[in-house]
Length: 493
Image (cartoon, rainbow, N blue to C red; front, side, top):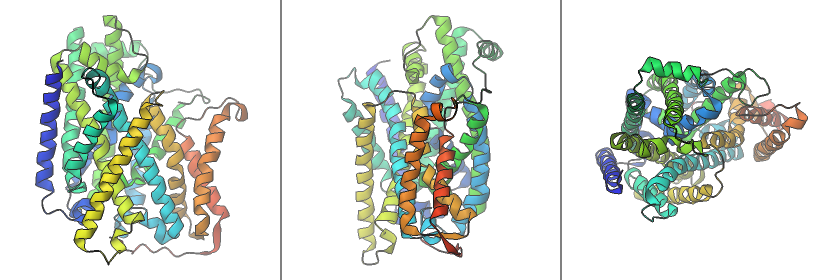
């Protein structure tokens, strides 16, 4: 593929995003930016969240992961369904009853100032790392196959993407993101289906033949029954459940879209539909991964050492111009989807939870908007720095690294919200940050020496559950003897 064709695809797609932004960001206010005026159509939100949930990690890393892990990731996906049910039935009713703008305000009402700041801080940490990883994966592929050949440094490539994302999202915020996510989901799914079709066509195989080939080569294996294995099927299932609860239900980025729906009922329908769509979509990505390995084997193509680049290598160098163009459309969509809503959510959390923009009556409306603009650009700069830094330390499949780090950073959030929802006790609020920091440290040590301590047992994604449980236990030690009545009528818009 010529650089000119790729540049044309990139510019046309970017122009479409800016067109949507111009329409949706008209007369935008802070409430438009934060919650889309609570007028987002739930079907649009549900469909758009498919792309936001998948991002570049699923688009590239999961197909390449099949060579080592087969279809075992499906047990994580099945766990997602239960996790989404918990969000729908437990968390969303609380968020809507309290009419929250940022979900961490719940912690202030339930426990106090330090719990509130701790929850917000761990979200900021988690989402900056997560968004940077996702964005890195996509831009790194573009760098290897395009920008390196043009002599453009990696940091410049990152800067270009992030500036463009900032420009189309900084005014409309979530009101714009809801609609751009819909377009990005479409291009990602079209790229997935078209690529599978092209693989079958080039190999002269029908779909039933490819399914048989995948089974014969052992790629379709879902259940790993060895209990000490880090992908033991029960560990995968429960990890998927809790990953969904924390990375969606306790994550401002994902919940901000849900809270932009008109009513609780619509938000619940959105979440239920999303959970059902993600199962076949993730299965298709795994099937694509198996098909890529089958294709490489039959064509005598060497598998790259870093399997994250298997999909782009084949799409660009072997599938032809049409397939390469479709792949790049999906890849560019994944790049934008990885960062736009994250920047919006991080800006929302920082301006409300740390700068207290909603409580600063001394500021005019225009001053509050200017403060939000400055925060938006600051968050963008921070993510650029982390992406460039991550390129220097990347040494394994990004999906695994992402979930591993999530286990350490989201664990305290899981423990805090669980204690708030399932206990009536108040806490000695000033000690909450200590518990929230100690728990991940203990988990890191436990995971590092689990072979010696637990008879060969290896922790996988379930370290998140252990982290949340340790946080919960730590909170038991700092609870007060008197109960704190729950106030769920707080309005913190």
